[in-house]
Length: 123
Image 1: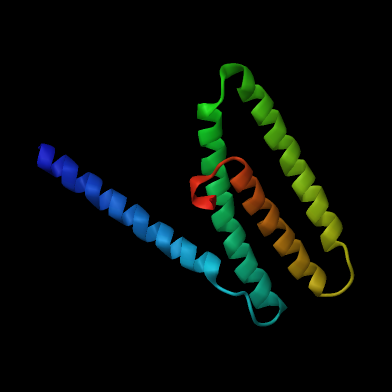
Image 2 (image 1 turned 180 degrees about the horizontal axis):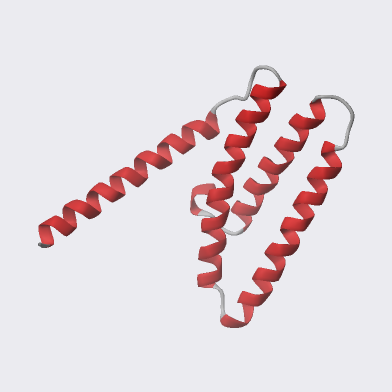
């Protein structure tokens, strides 16, 4: 029974490492092409960073002192509002470049927040 548990755990760790490596290669790709291709590529990177952000936030909540948890929740909600407002402002420019700028704003701010929260994948 112990052997089955160890083998299963090893397989899960291996699968997670493979998935992370695949995500990392997606993050390392250059977003090139037309506006639609570039926005889709940036949005895919944002989705990866958003997943990492959620994990970093969950870990930060677990690691926080009890009196800090409510403040962290409040800070995260405020950060989301700020990010959305800032990127809306940037995306309100004229021309198709505004869509690229908007997508890149979301990506870069999400990556930065992940790193601020100490996301291990983001370091």
